[in-house]
Image (cartoon, rainbow, N blue to C red):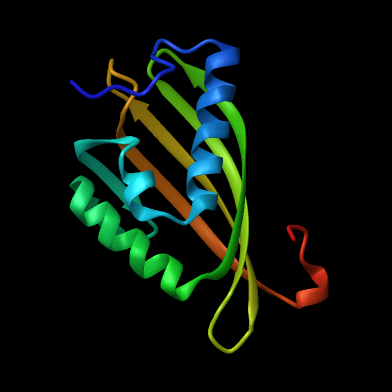
Length: 137
């Protein structure tokens, strides 16, 4: 059976570790690697899109990182309890026309006992920025 420590129920230390692991994985921009942190039947809501299972996760992330160029993400633990973690995040990226954006959001995560994420609910807003306003280089 697949597993991805640390396992719930989370402590402050293990919740922080899980958030950092997610940030590192997403910054790799590798859909195959990122998808392995989720259960086979994981369910997502990302903005207005509903995604079910690892294959849809991989397809979604592939499309995302083809559009969101030079993507750079920072996540911050907001709170945790038992099998759940909430994070706030921001990331920067530019489109094919070199228009820069900073995207702000919140995610709610729920994990299976094996440490894989079963549910991910993300609300995200994009703000136009100039390249000289970037925080993440």
